[in-house]
Length: 196
Length: 177
Image (cartoon, rainbow over all chains, first blue to last red; front, side, top):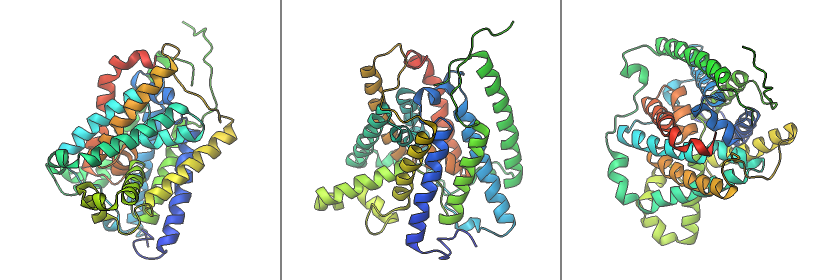
């Protein structure tokens, strides 16, 4: 059955329309969770607000479990679902640059659109920065193409790389997340602050 | 020892409920389109789209545009992530309107000026934009969506983003606390 667009159960235009609807859900949940505030987002790095960790890991686990169960029930063909390629060098260097951008700017791309949508001017400026950053990457592409294409590992799953089944890895991830949630609740009590 | 200071709480959704809802949105994206959520991809589409209008010949020679074209046929603006991100703006606005949080302002710690906050937001945005291209996706597309499909690269990017931000937090503390 799923993915609907790839199995041509829905048309391309319906797929785009549903993208818009899914986007509304995405933006709505981010804003309701407080991801429109950079000071709330940055709280995870100082212990006073761990909303990022709680929402992020709960969401990843929910979607992961959903996909595993959908596949088990025969509702989705996981071979047709896009798995991000692994280019080890650029994944690490890109991630490090994004990490600096995160602690400096207080947003990531998705949350900056969310912040801008409720009137945060700093979020709008962050979006301006995103455009400049992507443009710099595009204009100087030849300069970093080597790094960008280095250490291509295909499309490996982390479970395969660790020699575990998807289900067992999922269970371990849930246990790890519960440990982090416990630490997050402790940190929030230890470093209480006003909510932004 | 009792906590005497009253901690003001604003009305946000319980983060675990928010996480489950976000996970269901991500699951819906995979079920409908066979792909996860994203954000930076829509910016890339917009830039490629703008470049092909402003400088059609030069842009078609660009290796960056060629690389984009390999995976996207037709109008660069007619992509899944562009429609999704338009939805994010609408959804964020609706949520803010319902919760009474619509307000034009520069949010910053009282220890820094608005001007400094704006400059840091600009610098952070530039770095994040550049990094998201190198890392083939941002927190949404690479880290969150990658983790849901158990992509090794997704987990690596997630750890690199959050690990670096934690490691650098000390140097930027005055801007936040």
